[in-house]
Length: 114
Length: 144
Image: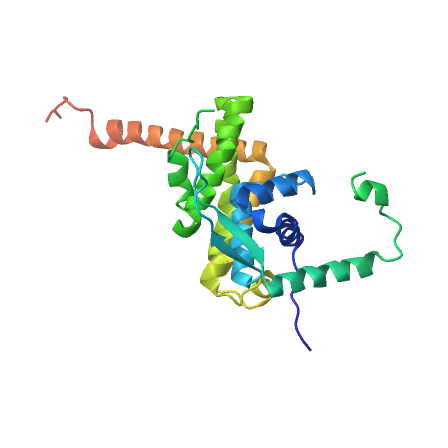
């Protein structure tokens, strides 16, 4: 049997934020995305630790961008999901959906932020 | 907008638990956020925010460093299930104690004050008794 690791909730949120942001995913933008979309304010320092762990697990890879051409501009570390990262998100989301099936807890309009 | 840099002493603190290759990027992001908060809420609010950021980042980074030292195969659940070495148990106990103390700040304060006053009073009394009864008072010579 293939052993699949389940993602802890916060790691799942971070991976989803990286997916949502696409090429613009770096520390501060991920923190902003989590605060605005998931309404979950996070510490940037703690977020970097989680990104480090996800990188260790092989779920994300990072690359350093060129410094921005503005005053105080500097290079940033951008994150992208790997194939196994996407598989882990998909796995967790599928299990969650299966467990939620038939449970009438979610108000769809509230869940979509409408 | 003038770019305001955060005090570098906080970078020194972070360098105690954040690896060098991550520190530059983390510090730069913190710097951007700090400058934004200075602009909107003032320097005092930004300073408070930065202290909180540095404090909150301590535990997750130490946990990650510990996991890295244990090897890439280690996952939290396996880590809890396998036979723990004495060091593992000690670290876990310390972390549990810190969490428990943080949950009850008033109790922690009373305990720390009790220990402080207790140790201080004992030291003071011992100094007096030692000076007066055992060593004798300076400047006085014993008579035959």
